[in-house]
Image (cartoon, rainbow, N blue to C red; front, side, top):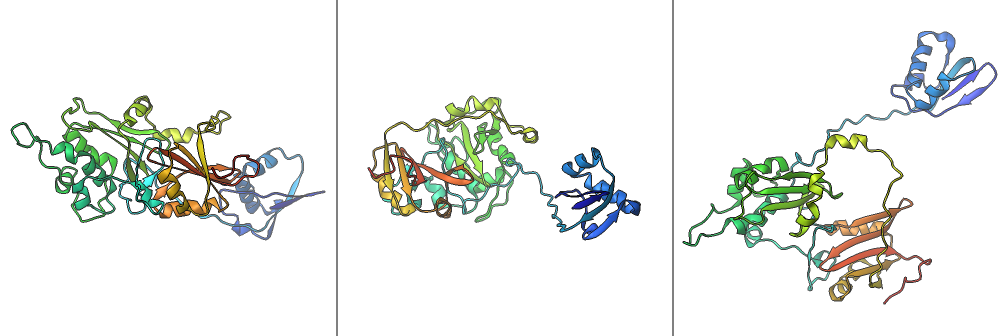
Length: 355
């Protein structure tokens, strides 16, 4: 947009809330009456233009609008992970989180095979694809609900996919059984069990406890992480780490109040003994991880970390991603007792060498 006073010309890029296209490549004079007032009203929706028009110390005679572009307005629905169906276990398998530990597969030949995800035999034999939350509940409580009394009789009805779908009122299918957190509470209410749900930022999304929790079924509380419409079961010792966080359950309207702040934490560097290896591909990590005795391993590569990130995701693993200056500086993953990082080579660091 440009405009003229009786002595000078000015130009300004604006972003208005309205349709400027009808003024595109046209001259609009202050003598045009209704059109002039309509254009001025539109321009006032841009903060910079509003400030200029409000404090102008000149006579504005002419405005020329050029090179207009209209943004399509997208109206999306509010996202709430407690009401969204969870089922995406085809695209998601493993994730890097300090509350989740995967056993190391010593027979692994590829990166994805490093992570040994254990499941109950019943779940393996009757697995429901793309039904992650349903599988998680069955895997967690199959053994606990199949307990026998001293006289050999069952304490509870056998937990099957059929029974679980009946309790939570879902149709039983061979696959693609989506289940949301809110609806799953019917199961936890029936058996008087607890449920904790967190996100990748360790915010507690939900913490449910019955009035009289059932002490004869383990785990008494199921703790899960929800991310990308998928559930990840937390380690047993996560209960100690989450106990303080439960008091601070996230409120969804708080998102609107988030502001940029100058308060932040600086990560402490890892000072423990660390192995360092140079790799040319993601699968080069495998043997190094399998046979290391160190808790921390650092991999250096000349490859683009974005390519390695996509390769990890393609192998169903979500790493931790660290950014700086608009680029990825490291990718983190954890398996067994090992915390590992993949970084680009940096000639300014003295320890970028094989050990």
